[in-house]
Length: 431
Image (tube, rainbow, N blue to C red; front, side):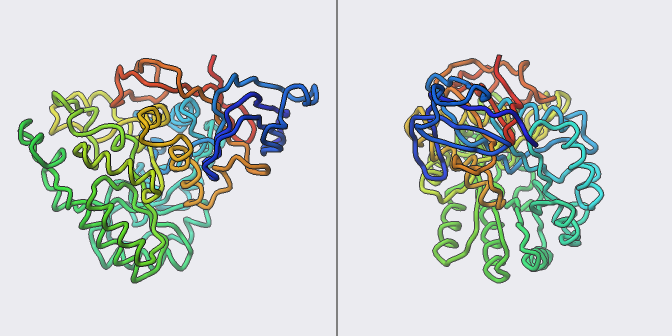
């Protein structure tokens, strides 16, 4: 697509790929970055270029979210591609990977094609389908990975469901390896989870709720990593939330395995104590962990052990959340709040801004082998401008998502996205 040239000037340029910050501007032409740096100034640009004075705001690559439930097909009462991508654009997310746990699941090339066409017609940002790893997400029979990849699937996962059979998962990894396909897997032993609804420990006992042991995640991750070592497939752990899992991940890296992992914005900015008096909007899978676990996850992002931070956007309607904690559905919306929640870690001094954006943009792009996530000449002009210091109180009623189940209800946050560009086109402009 061709759009009128546009320039952001007087900006704080953050390049998460190089982990650098500088003053200057960005010139956008024909959907790509045509220039970046101190030379991009209003006084030297042609009159044909639309100039936006950023007044010191940050300009950076748009965010890439590896875990988003978009609702279509079959769950339009929870979310649609139109509402999900509007929320994404408002939150500075320029690419979303769509969860295959729809109805029907994304386990057929025709469903992949449907999703891509719907995204083209109604979406504001890039929507990339992740296809099912097993047919019907049942964990028993491998999906047609080759055909699904040819149709446009960028990765393969059973969403929040783990493939419990080691034999089936080994076959899936082997099949995926032959197509050089990425397997993204939820690491949770459902039998060990049992009736648990929150993190196992003293706080769960105080609330009288059944706990989920940390080992439920780590046992599955350990199995996966051993099978990856056996098959040499491309593997990404969808959500890592415990120090036990971090230890296993580090051991795998030390053995030379090229594996990647993500955690959610909720798990690095909240802990189990935030559940308070049975707040069901904080009932998540995996559950929120102890404060020490949260801090360790932040350190792992800073060191690069954890590659990506995701929103884990999972809309749930009122009927499924306004229930006793043990009966409520898992999940929270997060597309619009991922960046501002992450900026809490920057303002607290736990993460630098380039490292936060590396985990939200550059590394996800590298995992998916996308050209985005870079603030360099010739890269796609998927860009955001935001003020990292602008305060606001989150009003769930203003969220673009169809459902409002945010864990940051009435929270004081910093960081407003003012512009979002996808391929050089403005898809969100703060008024």
